Amino acid sequence: MGQSNDVPARDVPPTPPRLAAGGLVAGGRYELLRQHGGMSGQAFWEARDRRLDRTVALTFVDPLPGEQPPGSATGVLDRTVALTGVYSDGLARVLDVIRGRAGGIVVTEWIPGQSLAAAVAAPDPDSAVRAVWGLSDAATISEEKGLVLGLDSPDRVRLTEDGRAVLAFPGVRADVDSRSDVRGLGAVLYALLTGAWPMDLPEGSDAHGPVDGRPGAAERDDDDELVDPTVAGSGVAPDSAVLAMRSLDGTAVSSADTVRAMVASELGSVPGSPSAARPAAAGVGGTAGSGQAPGQAPGQSAGQSAGRSAGLGSSTGSDLGTTRGADRGANSGAGASGDASDSEHWFTAAEPTDPDVQKRRWQIMAGVSAAAVVAIVVLAVWMLGALGGDRNDTPLSAQLDAIERAAQASRESATASPQAEGSGDGSGASGSDNEDDAEKDDAAEKKADASPIEVSTVTSWQPAASNGNAENSGSAPNVVDGDPSTSWSTDTYRDQFGTGPGAFKPGIGLMLTLDEAVEVRVLELSAEEDIRFEVRASESANPTSLDDTTRLGSGRVSDGEATVEIDAPEKAEYILVWITRLGTAGPQAYNATVSEVELLG
Figure 1 (cartoon, one colour):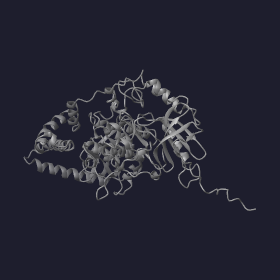
Figure 2 (tube, helix red, strand yellow; figure 1 turned 180 degrees about the vertical axis):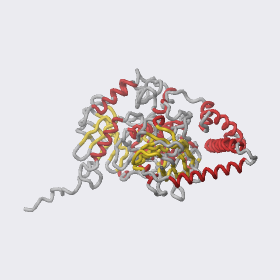
Figure 3 (spheres, rainbow, N blue to C red; figure 1 turned 90 degrees about the horizontal axis):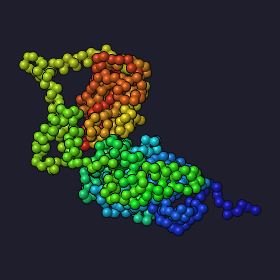
Figure 4 (cartoon, rainbow, N blue to C red; figure 1 turned 120 degrees about the vertical axis):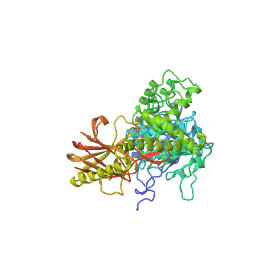
């Protein structure tokens, strides 16, 4: 007798079970209520926990089409379980992960409110930036822990009843990374500003129909470029549009921490301050001054918030939700006040910034010392008058750029004047030119006598206490590869580097590790215009602070080049190129790109 035709072929992957409202899953514990979208290998459902009589969110994780079980599902579940260590209002708590032979289910707390699609059906640009604070915080914490949030689809996001965007259906795919999280943040903000989704949907999204539908595709121009939110939407503030577009650009901003700081700045907090670093000073987050627990619905007690994660009966570890719930409950205080005035300021424990104070902060940002601030304010009055009348008619970015250019000209003039006066022959300019020629001759002579120093590795570096991270370290070796077409770049910042209240960080550096400790006598750098930097020696490749390094000299890029002669060289195995001032990339846009660094000894 031949083999029965009823036996399925072993090389044909099984089809995931069809899910439908009213169906029971996980041994009958969860009843499916409504579908909220999905993609290849994942499906998002609202469900009722019949054992604990509560609403939960379920993310069904299956092998991708054509994979043999469990295929990529195991990795998705593992990466999502790791997010249980991320405590943020922008991420729904993972209560349980149920694993099966062909995939699994991620069980998370239900986020009352509305889907992103429903929220952007009538966009409210005024509240859009405030809404993404929690998401940017969750992405930042994930990045700090070496994890990825997986913000790749509008289906994953819900808005709470008080307007906060939350990743409600986590399921971290293999093809996402921290850069895609940054783009996802920009996409959510763009959707909240304009009502349209600016990124391509994940493959297989069409097979999953969310109950509220999805935001429409964002408009593009004739060159297939995304239309700016100020054009695509109505009443969109230019600063909000800049934040969205730069986050969507994977090269302009590469760090979620940068996005979070920009959001905090837009909300009126100083980037990097305690109130901007977390939603509330008390710990994980929540409503400042209200005692409301993070993720807690208005009017819900802290005990209820903590109790939501009790009695899970998890097949992979019942403490997934319990530990986290207890932690949140401990930080929540006695209970929620339900005061609307409190919930309006959930993002910071500080009082709203006085407009006059904020105005002074913007002015201070343009300078690096008290004397410079005075000069800049005077110059600002003149420049703004030249720009034409009413201050409100001039965009803030243009005002700041004008102030910066005037201040720079003032500093250069002040530096040149003593040189001219010191010539002693009535021809100051000629004397200065002669001195410059002499300096160039000395530099050429020193370079001719020097020999190249080998560099073994290069990484980006910043002090441990600085905001953000030492970005783009992977491309740092490009500066010593001898190829001018390759380079290393910083992120793009809204504010210039410095130590003032508006600066995000004081600087960022390239740490060069030499083959052995030698004396560096000349450093040559090829970079974008007007970048300023210091050359420093270090005893280790990762010093804790700038005080652990020794300043050897400084330079400024002119015509794409800078040469620093070190008059008192020290033997060192590690040389730090510490960038103290970025180049101007556009209105409220500052960055630095370095193509080559050469050391001579």
